[in-house]
Length: 145
Image (cartoon, rainbow, N blue to C red):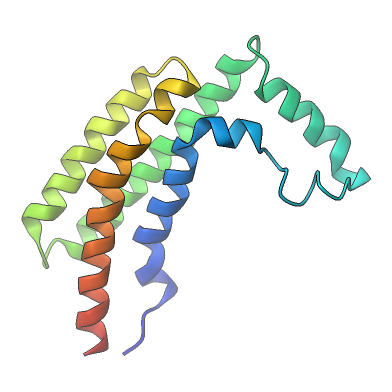
């Protein structure tokens, strides 16, 4: 039996969400990887303006709220997927992941700056991403046998 994209979804969301916790790198490197590097005129003007606003202290609150919403939405999906996929494998571990996720969601909700979000990245990695990866690995091994 092979793994499907659906099987990869919980760990994929964890990795994508973990990237969002590195808020400083997100703001500093916004679209620097391809779109701004090659100065695509179709996108450059708009993206440069967004990047300016993203790094502007006067606009920070607007972007912070959207950033928080994306993290919380991803974490909600992670909780749902982990609960439905892995509960029959290790209910205690799933419960710890759910509790840790809710705790982090609460901290994200209370964050008032991107830096306050950034300090949560190690907690997310250790208490959500790594345990989900361990469950994913066990699940994958059981599916391949």
